[in-house]
Length: 277
Length: 331
Image (cartoon, rainbow over all chains, first blue to last red; front, side, top):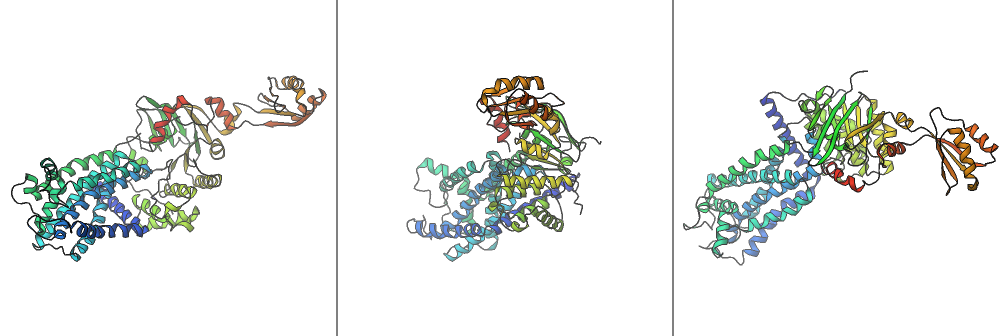
């Protein structure tokens, strides 16, 4: 049987098609990996549920929401935002692992679409993220959280969460292409946690010192959390006297996402394509 | 013979102050195995990366089947396979999963990708492990999987960068068998190695490179012939070394090197050689009893030592360490 190498496309539509097809193949790769690692799959699905329960009942027993309201109602938008933010590190990890194991070089030496790898990695992350999101939503519903403002705002809230996650996954992809080393990536991993903590995701910021409050208010995680609270109709929406990002959380999330994409999509694609040594 | 399928002309590549390649020339005829031999840091990996379109040369040209590796990189990629120094497989996928993934990424149809995966697994003895995760494979199996992953599209040229480094002897043998199998298909193989026996067993032609330049080219036999055969004589009585030395010097026309420790002598032979029967008779006549007399072809190690001034597999000398770093760190 003769296996012929297909000719690389020469038109831009052909190249776009290759990019899409290759990107989808790489998404499929992530799914096959999960199939091979049922343990990992279970952990990645159970983890969000555990966080809901842990934060909801441990913190929830001690934290008072300004203006009243149930802490678990307050918490869920924060957890959604946190997961959207920290997911970038798992992309970093995967990309860095591919780079350090030579898999990236194999991709590069194959006649495949050149931007398919970053597109595939980030696309796969979002698809996997949707699964985790569903688990969190279900757990949230079980512990008493729910959206209150009807279908359309709810859809908008989830759309923002997914958009921000996608934008972050490009930042993560770029980081992975730059560090090229899974050990380094592994050490970077815990750094994303403090960033999510320096926000309004888990605790009201009212009691923080002024400088710290300023930091948290400008943290995109805060804006993402605030946009979710607003759109879900959950408690904790800041009243009036706060900074611009929290007064316009939806616009802030859109701006952050756009900025991340504008910066990191070209950077990642260029870095991936750049020939090394 | 046709034009060589792999051609490199005057390749230069610098990494900062390190000059990894300094005018490397290569020519590999189609259907042969070319062994690129050199100490650590000689520029082997850099050369392979340029030929496989992963790096651009600072100066010089390289062509695969007539296609320039820089200007026509896409065309070249459709013709080649590359197995780097690491087994570049997805450890979280099964062996079969890896082959299917890379088949799909090579734009085979799902059916063709699956069929090709099974063919390769069958042919290279990995069928039993096909549904196990590659992360659980032994080093040798992982390398073999890595190797056959390059074969999905039946590349015309296969680049193998130190394909057996770090493997136990049995696994090395399996990789060698796999490479020989490929050659029967007509695949051209360019392999780098620091194992001389590997080059000796597999390569039709050997290119010895050092400091980024080819310093010798030829078949293993040709390279060995540049040193010539040696005559080794072990004496029963080490006290007679002097007498034996003058006999051998007369026969071989060269000064023997005595080793008083073991009571033996070794003398290089001019081309044309010498008859063992003459040696034994002349020694006998001089009253020297020989425990062992043997003609020995030089090993590639000796050729290598002669050409580069240092052994191949040893750790690099301190002054080489700078040069070693980039070649190793890049993959």
